[in-house]
Length: 84
Image 1 (cartoon, rainbow, N blue to C red):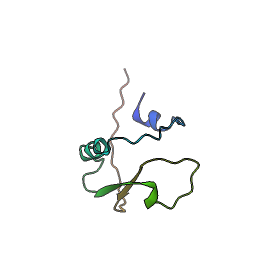
Image 2 (image 1 turned 30 degrees about the horizontal axis):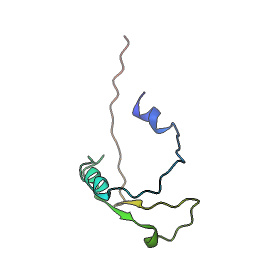
Image 3 (image 1 turned 90 degrees about the horizontal axis):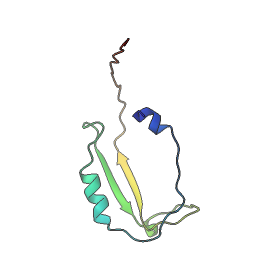
């Protein structure tokens, strides 16, 4: 299955745990993520419910907010076709 196919398959999980996790695991993971585009700056913040003003049907111990600068990117791709 290609990455494009995977992006359009929707799966949801509603069996969340309210247990707190080791937040350092999240920080370490994000620190090691390779950005899709090195020229776009991004940042993140791990938020607790007391820092948010949202109305949802669920509660979570943490929320992850991702931020990036606004950029218009034109992707140039070349596709090679094989007749075999």
